[in-house]
Amino acid sequence: MHHMTLAEIARGLADKKFSSEELTQALLARIAQLDPQLNSFISLTEELALSQAKAADARRANGETGALLGAPIAHKDLFCTQGIRTSCGSKMLDNFKAPYDATVVARLAAAGTVTLGKTNMDEFAMGSANESSYYGAVKNPWNLEHVPGGSSGGSAAAVAARLLPAATATDTGGSIRQPAAFTNLTGLKPTYGRVSRWGMIAYASSLDQGGPLARTAEDCAILLQGMAGFDPNDSTSIDEPVPDYSASLNGSLQGLRIGVPKEYFSAGLDPRIAELVHNSVKELEKLGAVIKEISLPNMQHAIPAYYVIAPAEASSNLSRFDGVRFGHRCENPENLIDLYKRSRGEGFGAEVQRRIMVGAYALSAGYYDAYYLKAQKIRRLVKNDFMAAFNEVDIILGPTTPNPAWKLGAKNSDPVAEYLEDVYTITANLAGLPGLSMPAGFVDGLPVGVQLLAPYFQEGRLLNVAHQYQLNTDWHTRTPTGF
Image (cartoon, rainbow, N blue to C red; front, top):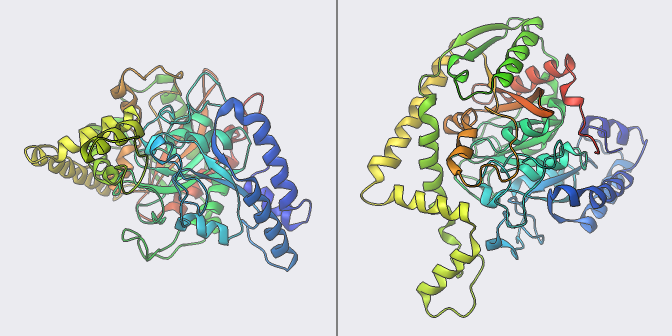
């Protein structure tokens, strides 16, 4: 049963080939057997899962239907789940049990999903390798010596290893798309504001966005359907109708204009990945797409702009974790200042401390205009580049990452080298655009992803292109050895 996609599970449950309870028990047993190799989960929720599965079976017995009714998933451990530890991968929140459900969690629960647990992640979603977690690094099931990508590496590794069919994730600078590329999955970052951030513990509020990780575009469409929609609790949520994402999957690609930015093929891109990208372009041409070279001239400025804006917002968001209002509290503080210093010093890991310090510096009185304000101006230029490009093309295509997954620990001594791995993904977050990564081949036995970007609220177009590509290729069907 563990090889079934969400769509196949929905059909199996509808045809009474198995029950949600049987499926849940089988996957919980598989997680117990295999996850010690991967470290993809922080918390398992067996009792909750079995009770939700029984409830889903009862709802189906009463005639209720739904693609997600009885489907097992997991949540990245920054979505608040009532009464269950929500740690953000940090010692700071190691003992925090959320008093309420995040909107995403509540919506998916209402749709009938079964929560198997909370997945491991880079601490406070800060990282591209899933090595900064307080609970230890996550391993890539394609090669246990390599990273699975971050910060949603736990969700990605669990889905790739067939421990469950799909999982929620978040993307601040590529944290859905990059792990999807590294683990042979399909991952979608929706338009900013499409999925509610209420109850999603913030890293950088103007960049964070929740989305689905699954094996196929079809499954991403099913999961996104349950996640998306306006939320009055979230001031950044956009009141825009949610289309039926599954209904648009089978549209023709005839005449679709696909733009390939020339800036993507610089010296920093592994030539073997460049070849796989070009192969994907040829495959889409066979399906009727029209390819055009375009330019995104301000892409070169995106990484420095992002690594000013994101840490600045993080330094503000994480100021609440001070040992008084929220989070870890040190033992026997001498005074209030000692309480603040030691609680934060003990509770936050090195990468989080680094980004808080960078952000606080960028926002300080003498440097705000020189750094933060300048970065926001660059952000607008990046957005303008995309708006100009989308006047000429319908979709933008390129590599998701410049390199395949690296070995665990290989970039720990050089944070900037790790930051540079986000070069193709962060522009979508700066502009608020939807982006999708889909499997496109392998380099040295490690998966490679191709990224698609679309205009605002055109997630359906991304899913349509990816689904048609997957109907004509088999990369997404490959399974890591031993799983």
